[in-house]
Length: 120
Image 1 (spheres, one colour):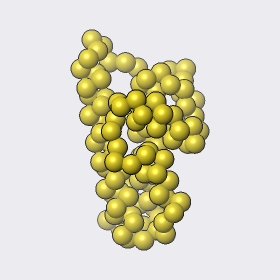
Image 2 (cartoon, rainbow, N blue to C red):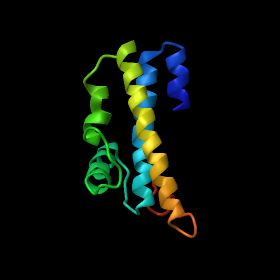
Image 3 (cartoon, one colour):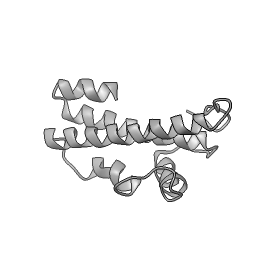
C-alpha cells in the first residue's frame, strides 16, 4: 500500500489503482498460503479467496472478493476511482492483518506461510 499511497499523493491515478490492485491480490495470497492453499495465478487467488476464505466465514467482506478486486477492469483511472479503490484496499488489508493476528494468537508458534506452495 505504500506505493499506492505515494502515487495517490502524486496524483498518478493509474499507478495508484495498479498498486492498490496488487495489495488486494497479495493480501489474499498471504491468507491463502497461511491456510496451506496452493495459489499462483491472480485468477486462482481471486477464486480461491472467495471460496475458501470469504464463503467459509473466515473474513467478511461487503461484496464478493472478485467484485472488489476486478473493479479495476470496469473503471477509468480517475481520481475519484483511485481514491475509492485505495480506501477499499486499505479496509481489506486491515481485515487481513486482523485475521492473521487472531490466527497467530491461537497458535503456539507462528506458522510459516512461505513454503513449497509459494512459487513467485
